[in-house]
Image (cartoon, rainbow, N blue to C red; front, side, top):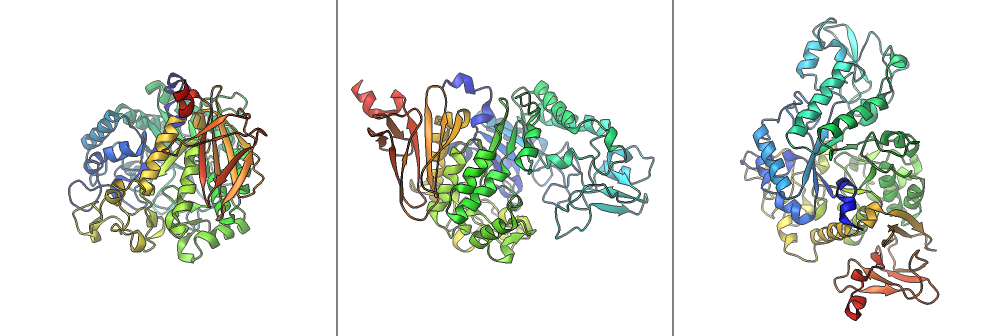
Length: 566
């Protein structure tokens, strides 16, 4: 596939890497990560194959929700550096060919934001209508508490002004009223500001809540919220045509598809990418059952993204590993396999664990998950530390268990900081996943390490645009534990086969575009080993327990024997 066809839509075969500046690298020895430290680690991202960094919130905050309670949308938290440090990081990343996007958290503000301080000063204040107020919580208002361990209502009474305000998250985070044209204009200014400083887009937090109008007296008269999302995408495109909106939309497929844009127009004029929460959760169910069926079912159900949009795939993100789209019985299966202790679970809907401890450190199962990440149709998104198999620390509160400092070296402070570890934002992982056992330094020097394998996955994925750009198709395998799918363009294709079972299996596949005598090259084998389709047209693929194969279908350059003959 010609690179000139793929370069404009760079995000369709990007490798996205999410990190929290606060926990990545301390540059001044005060115990907190910062932009100065992060900038010095850019080359690690280059070697990993990252093409886009997603920054978690770095704005000024009261730190009541790990940075998501923002007090100024136009600044950098002083603990993390200055605007100058931010722009220096963006410039350095771009110099290495890495784009940068950041969290756009405009569903709510901190209660200490100047806008809300003014809004609660009186019912006639300038910013009063920038938030959602009611005399009494409405019966037809929004439902569902996001943090049931801390909140029992979505409405908080404000003594000063005598009304209730809406807060989808913590009570310290009042929701903005995006139906207000002034708020919409301000959100556009925020996006324009950071785009001007070099960002290539945003990960949009809690998109369905951002667009919600339930609970407002004039909800039936308000403009279509999806029109607003399309306006944001158009505004961003005018400011920087390559920019993207990566949306957090944890909804069933039928509801989620609308967030790409008009489903009848086959154009993506709203979110550029949407996370595939359903597919992620079904993957864990497949791993728990050692049965490819749940994941295969999700791939069959998942609607195709519009031409100018794409899915984003992930193994886990920065929050709890949510399992809310599984049935109660299915969720119980995953809990039993990967987080049986109550302390490992969160909100009765997810796990506050990283993958390696969940599978008992079984390297085969870890690799299986990340092989799926890079081959399933969509843009792969990594969470920092996944590349070395970091674990969690359950002594940390709630979701902080998976937001431990990055482990660079085997030393006491993990190479994260020269300060005492008890000053770090979160405690380091311990036990089998402590820095002395899991770190970048050691794995960078081991060609058989997980880090080396993830680097290879990223490199081969970038060399195989068919996986991201091609039409994908599931193949019949005859084995319930084996998933086989193909990504294909007009001139080539890649076949990926994954064994979810803890025993070796052989499947015989009829591969479209690969008749008798066709040669398939193994993309992950350094000796360029491959397979030849026999006379009956059924390709035998042998897989070890939890094994996988990436096989290129038929171009001359990928068949060393043919190249040698010619």
